[in-house]
Length: 76
Image (cartoon, one colour):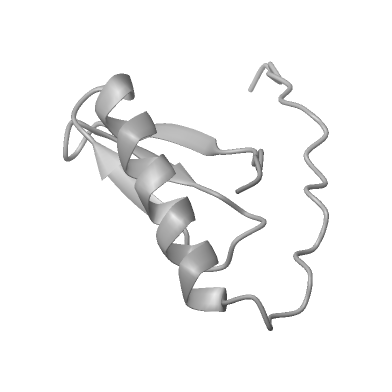
């Protein structure tokens, strides 16, 4: 067993009141949770499921190219 680290993009959806998380390096890896703790547990579960589905014969995953987050303010 080996450790894998992935970047998650997390947003809050005011319409549903849920946190939504996506793992860009794993196509199809997205989930939601009522709290950030619940979201983290759900993200871990979906990552494991995606990796299991890929199987050991799958091609290596692409690199996680996350750079950062920047808040941009404009006057309109």
